[in-house]
Length: 333
Image (tube, one colour):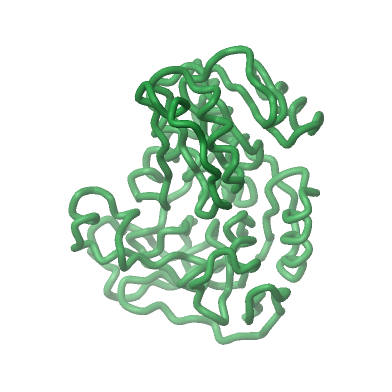
């Protein structure tokens, strides 16, 4: 099969002809139809995430068709896939199921967890294998290309959003893929969105307003109201003190990324009055089950820019340079 392979960090992916994987116990073999490109992929390529398996096939927002099912999957709890079914493969690829985190409903924190496109080969390829228990049935309302960004930007955005509780005034720092999706859900639930973009990014601010944001400005600006919560999707540490500074009492700042630059010091007074800083790590299967029930009813809509598999490097370069007009999605088969 064809695959775009990362052989060493900080080098371009290489198109290779590699053996088609065979499903092991508990796994599905999936023919990849589409795979969205994520900022986490950039963090891996740019060596900001330092423990990938190498060589590696990136990609953890995979939409495909079940090609083969290992005999052990039949009757397995939580797995009801058939050959020909459409399936979504997310970032969380495996957990041990027995640690204190897994047994307390926090499988996203499992110390032995494996991750698609990081410690397990992912979807920048014609085929992928995945543990059937960690795959999702996808809503029929979405085409393959359009649903693929929901498997990470959507799911991580949803988990981060749920951590803000019943906050009415919600700030979103870094108005990229995840923020676009969260905005739609939040407005559907009658929240007020305050969008923070790069300073002087007038086009991004205009787009945020077009989605229904009540205010949009640069990350160096002060919104007209104190916020009840904020989600930081940009991997920029100084945004945490900035967000705290505009929080109301009891406000929550949620860090939605897997990587962030160092956080500078800030006065304790900005944290006082029971303000909270928290992070989101990975996702759980429950997040996916809940989100894919909700998304079609909103409806949460994605905006994509399609690339062929062999143009994966172009997609990554445009992402890094901020030159995409939507989520980059590799159309594979």
